[in-house]
Length: 360
Figure 1: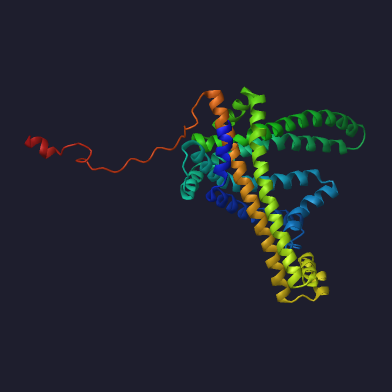
Figure 2 (figure 1 turned 180 degrees about the vertical axis):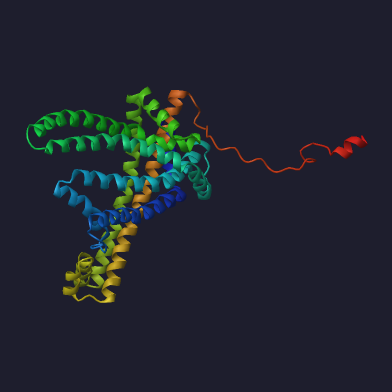
């Protein structure tokens, strides 16, 4: 286990893994915006506030929470979860394949080969994610719908209210059980497919089988591996904060504190036409605000890419350790799809032509 712990840390430093994770992050940002746009259009809000992406994505969630619209809140979370699951079924599969080749074979896989693997298996990875998501969300949705019967007038509403309490507790327990199972064992599903070249059923059965075979051992190894992830990610995050602090100090010293404060006001005014008009913004002001926003996003995205790469390698190391402990399968085992047979003519394959047989 100690060897795997160090190997996972070394594998996470591979630039190819970080690039794959970074591309996934860059795709996830507009994906969340698309999900928010669909929610805004359905609710009739339109595209107001799209200039402030983070607020635009969080607005449907906050609105549903403030209005007490539980079904809308659950639907929005499910929509965004499905969209992100679709994106990371491909990029997560590619990242896990890179980690699998590195930790089992001791070599660095090329990103195009990992993308080709993900293109073959993203449906299986997505199927496992959707099955776990449905198992956690559907019981809660049924409990909410049943509780709506308590809105009926008269004694019938009181009866359904009493029944809905029991139904909510039972289905809530089921949803929490599936959610905890997802948190505990579901993190291995992509690792199974990436290492075994298998499908979603095998991913789910292996993951929960390995967790059930030794929960204390699984928990201890998980804490050790993800503790290493926390150490490495925290160190990189501190470096990013140090870079931001030095850059801000240089800007204040050179351009002056007023210029920095002006850029902050511009960032706060984006997406609010009244605030923009009050500040009398020019195109140069917008340019400075866009550069500041993109720089901050880029630094945050690179840190997240490093964190995701470390998590991917830790998950693969955890799977390999559990597989070796439970199935006694060597760490170097890596399943791959058989290569297509090369084309050969009859003579190269060893078959003589009919005319030559007759001559003999």
